[in-house]
Length: 201
Image (cartoon, rainbow, N blue to C red):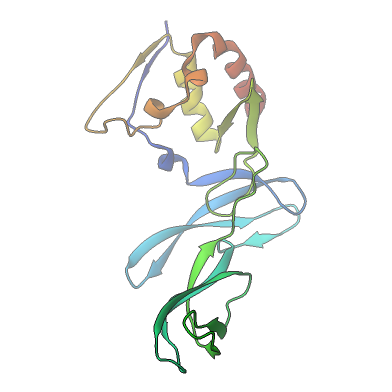
């Protein structure tokens, strides 16, 4: 009987690279972790470049919203405003006072919002909303992995007849503890292992 012991890995341990489908040529491509400096210290971003068509994405796709509090220049009443979503950052924004209906252009406060994810049933990465390369629907559920390392770790778990938790202060935070029931179910073991074998080829 094969044995699996949880190594307390969480999903973030597999973020080093994520294999996705290129949005331009639909080839197999890779999102890679890139450390960069900022004033608050080092942090990581994900950079995408397709080796087939050379399409590149460095930053997540943002949209913009104007919001804030303004004193009307006509009646001097205070009011809050919030705009619709803009594709480009607006330099000026026209507000209308709800007290006297006076309209004026102001320099607004702007905040960035991530572009709304596509709702097409596919599993996508959290940075650039690109569909994962390794994913397959099984009876209405989607089985997916980020990369080869993630695949190997899951394969070891699925193969094992004896699965041991190693709750070393991680609570319910490990990837294995949060797996969907259809992956944990013994009846799906052979089907999932066949999918993983095909992906590895």
